[in-house]
Image (cartoon, rainbow, N blue to C red):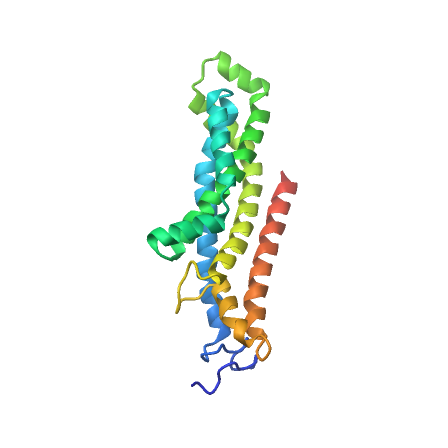
Length: 228
């Protein structure tokens, strides 16, 4: 058993060590790679699927809109945790399962935000002029709709990323996602449970990393929203 296990923060180990004597600062940095990568991947998946569907629903007010919004409502009925459990049962636990589950769960948010923003853009005079000039719908979306809904989409990216960080940490805490010996912040919180009374710093640092990441993302998203 390592002599420096559960060591408090010191000059040698700035954040202390865990139950196996591993440096917590190194573990936090390794956990950041997986937690941030999984959250960014989930947000990117939600963005790439949700925005085109939302724009399509906003531009075509017919059965297309009803189908897209109906599908969005169905996705909202399935929490990310249930999706992760189902996918894990089918394919096994991994970071990619978490990315897929969180990405699917985040699609409705992008669909709704981009649809509302698209409806606002479609009421403008320059859209009417483009239609009178028989500009193809794909060109209207690319030249006029997407640039004008970009500020709203950027804000939604910040929201989706911060929610994905929290959800990924929760799923990792429950045993989904990255498996030992690899680290994620949620996994580190799970491992710290038996030592909360004797070595509370094991839980403090990953919890603080999660909180600060979410706070920074929300502040950045709010600042971007104010600029636009």
